[in-house]
Each structure stands twice: as C-alpha cells, then as structure tokens.
Image (cartoon, rainbow, N blue to C red; front, side, top):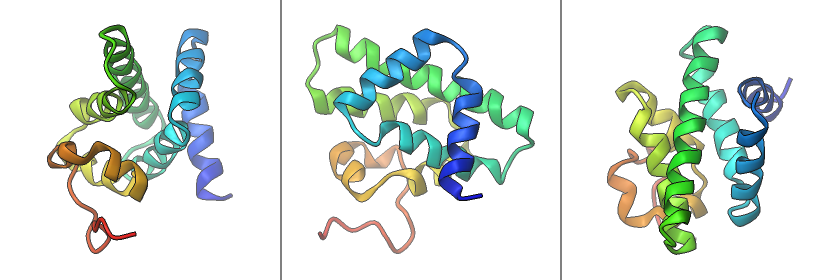
Amino acid sequence: MSAAKVGRQHLNAVLTRRAQRDALTQIEIAWPDSRALLERLAVGLSTCYAIDRLHARLDLIVSQAITAYGAAKHARQSDRDRFRAFIAGIAAVLEPDEHRALAMALTHAQRRIIGRQLSVVPARAGRDTDAG
C-alpha cells in the first residue's frame, strides 16, 4: 500500500466528528494540500507509535490545528497567517522527537508560506533551501 493511502487511512480513522471533517474541508479549500500535509505527518509518525497511540496523537494534532486555524479566522487574520496558525497549532502539541516528521511532511511551498515560523519547525536535512 502506498504511503499516501496509509496516511489517508490513519487520518480518516481520527476524523470521526463531522465538525472536524467539515473544518478540515474548509481549510483544504483555502489551503490545498493541508489535508495531505496531515496525511504525510501521519505516515511520518506511524514509524514511532503503535496504531492506538498514533491515532491518539493524530486526534490531538488535528484538533489543535483546526482550533488554531479557526481562532485565526475568527480574528480576521490574513490567509497566510491562518495557514501559519494551522502549522503552529500542529507544532504546539508535537513532542520534541515528532518535529522531524512535521518538517518532512511540509512541502517546499508550505515551508515558504510559513517563512518566519521556520524556527518552530526544524529544517529538513539537505532539502531546506528557498531556491525554486
């Protein structure tokens, strides 16, 4: 099974509440690839945890990311700041050894968007340049 399918399965397992699914859909409309980011993060974390622990971690991560994005939207922050809040929400609940999985899950374009916030997310070894 492909990594994308594995990530999708893990994420779907924790998206049990309609409000979560709806919120994530709205975030995905504003910021395409947000859901895929969470799926890639799920794949990265799946090497660290048993399924039950992984799903508990993902549930917390997703909830915090959605809450942070919603707060930024409610505060009428710019679109970019909303996405930065989404990433900050994820980073805020990660354990120290999980930050690498987030760094690996971010696309080059996403890393450019969060810009100043890169100190929250460790650089990807050998892949953290702004060229291109």
